[in-house]
Picture (cartoon, rainbow, N blue to C red):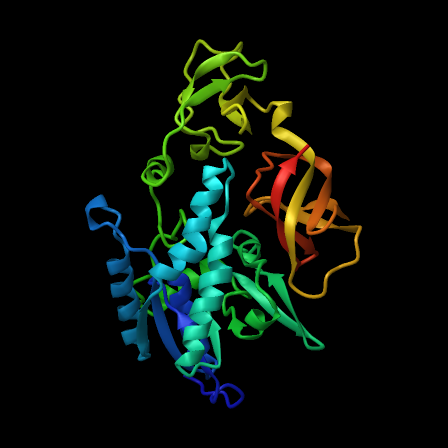
Length: 365
């Protein structure tokens, strides 16, 4: 491997998850001449009886990659931090009938705070992860840019990062696409080369979401109604549904005038009613949302601001205007109505390929 002089005295701690992305990120940094060590984070205390315990396998895979590359692997348990800073908030939001995004908070509070602080305490100069995004510095200001692989760009999940966190971070995969990552992993005989991408809740993994939540939140039965208020069936709690949801409603034939599928259009918190509609119904679309706690990665922009925004991961950025709406509040007006705007989720703003920041969706109209 080349040992490039500009990087040889810079120590990077890579968050090695046991997946293909962080494996290749580690290799690329070694090839660029950095001094590299790795760290495996355990952030969820799993119940081994539920058949979903993956941390042990992930750690084994991470160790095999570290051994193959000849780098040290540290291990750390951040489960208490994850519960206090991410999961507790996640549960409180669901209890209010909202739909939070734990991956966004996990990046801000765990991967780029607790992990960063621990890595620095171990002598690292910076950290690196396998995220598909880029960091650009312009006159001392750090910008978060989208990854070049549009299908894998993860800037949406990173929009809460600040200047300090970006200054201490590297994203080695930002300039390449997933197919190339798989190819590199295969060429280097990584055990992770064909490993399935992780999905589901950050660090918790793939589960039956409703059943998982019901182990932490009480059921609160209410009515499922159509747009006219006609009773259809009972639900077990608004916390277990999200706007735009189709799967899991279990509304069979005999309801509605067509055979089109049913979708969640609204959650009426006061009356504990879940409103569902059939097909691509107008109630699923709104042009305007109100959001709170706006976070700007660089300098706050002057409002109103014309830009683009995403209301969910992998959505194509949509033209909009951001307007001020009182202290700590903004209003976002889209050029075109958006489907399934969801309170609790993040709206993330862009100027071309630069992620400006984002805010938490409070309401839509």
